[in-house]
Length: 179
Image (cartoon, rainbow, N blue to C red; front, side, top):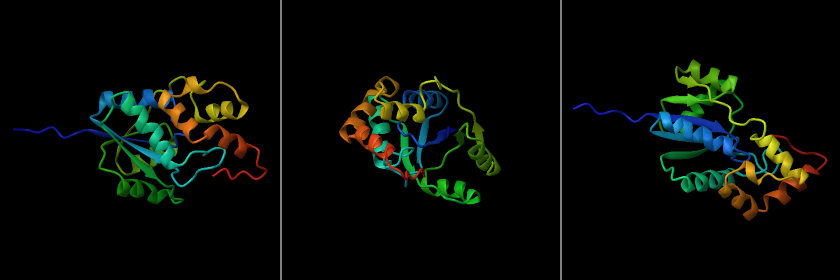
């Protein structure tokens, strides 16, 4: 009797914050795979304008959203940056369960995984006009409506941690550390 092995996908992002475009991509990936590993990239960074949320806060945003959507076949793994591209894929492999396929639109990530002989697929862009972390953070800073761009559990987490106040305060500092 032949057993089918589970097909597991890998997706990495900063998710600053996790938005509706991310959710749609996760759903599409899961329509083609049995499970997904979501790497929370740049996990060591927080409290800056481009990385305002901690890895733990992003973990909460994603897990609450997926559970509300009744999605349970995922793994969330914080992944700190390694400033040596030749070592990065090995670093990811050391932190995650085994995966078969990588989804990314980032040319460097694509190249690094292809060099390690992974199958790499591009992702469809979903409402990139509104659903980008940069655009959503800019709306938060400017006091514009942003809640419709993220799933409800993300709105709840951001309010719980007083994230709007945090990002607005960070945006007024003279010497913002962008990494």
